[in-house]
Image 1 (cartoon, helix red, strand yellow):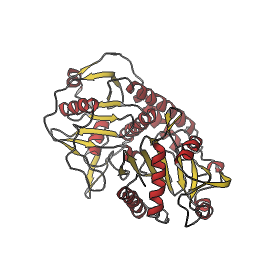
Image 2: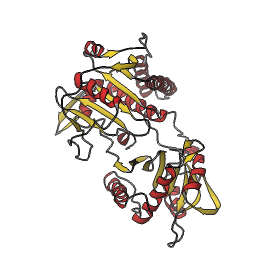
Image 3: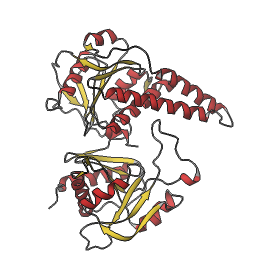
Image 4: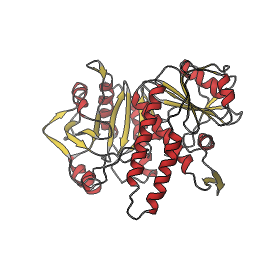
Length: 420
């Protein structure tokens, strides 16, 4: 008997179809519903198995040997860079829990497929290695010819935690299963760039936009503003990798005095991680790189980005201390381990826009913990403040308020971080 419901399987399959129809993907076969359900169920069961005191991490790519040869080798790979097992083995939870440790999210997956129509379970037939596309502030990507091995354009299921599975195709996130519920990935423009949260972040980080033809477009050079949005994305990804609870709050310019009135700092400190200076340096190096025929400044850009990643990782570690990490819009440290004590919210919380025309429904935040409650009260007391609440085994929720309107909550920002 399957643990995964048929309704959840249908939601995952529908998200795959929607992604293929609206995101300019290669035309690939739509996953068979029954086999997709079987694979999801095996992976979900595996996620519930404790493996040597830790919970399983594993990655599975549903790809046939024929598709690997005819599609992947022609479209996205210089060479095979794969291992083929001499004897295929039926995929089942205990085996996946054991072999899962040999895989790595974003770079290696077990290859599975059905060899016969009568097979009840997929067979593990090999392992595939790949290089993910470059993302925000990533390490230097492998751009040499020998490094051209793209992530396979097929269903890839990755166990992120207990009952937590991400479903991707290539480098794009389709959605996540968390505690038996599926949330599909939003378009890449949301929630970071969509109304209303996008407008709040644009204002917070100094991205200048102007209305034109019913949409917002750039108003001049937004290098600093977009750079800070990159910082935000990397910081949230670093917090997710840390796999622990955290609360990060951005204080808008002009609200510092009010913020201090609602905050206690057990670890008061002065100084700076100098991210503002590093962003200016990176922009300068990028300008010189564009002007140079030989591109001699490229290495300076890469070295500066390496420093930026290190400083943002340092902020993520500060956020691991119980309490809140408070940052300015320029990523200057205001305090860490901070205790927030704003008055309780007297108003409603609604879901923010999801990029598909959804949102606007009441969001019951009372079922969540003290970290969410303190963040909610703080955002309510300081309009323009943006808070990100990171759950140790689940979503990254965002709370924001435009002026004196209602509080908007985005239930899971992870769904836009990888929706490329």
